[in-house]
Image (cartoon, rainbow, N blue to C red; front, side, top):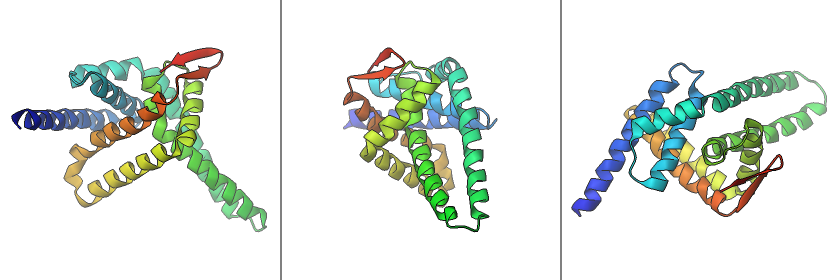
Length: 203
């Protein structure tokens, strides 16, 4: 019983520390993608090795994945702005084409959100270019749709908890990342290899 209690307390402390690091490093806004990638990198090590030093692992992943994740964040921001602009322009149309375009952009938004869920685990799991990271994230999110939907439930639950209990924001995000990576990584294990531009990224 004491062993289980110790492991539980250790999990809570690591989750709290990781959550705090993520929140602080997200403050510049532009570093949200690198910060989130670093959090998932720590979570991957955590689940693989169990015993880790959260602070040193976090900054190692933050530095190691900064360029790729920053570029991805930049393109994701541009794509988000384009999607919003498309919806605004489409809403001003006065023809039947309006509804077809709405349906198209809605589906595109769904794919966009699904890929966003899996992009961070993909970045820390595979050593691939940012283009291949996006491609693999889309394929994984759609190919393993049940894991993606469960991840959405986790995110919605985390947001709901923070909405009703703001103090939970000091812990809930890292726990959500831990659960999401545990789900998404099952998708990795069902695939032996991932093909990327003539190269093979082994799982």
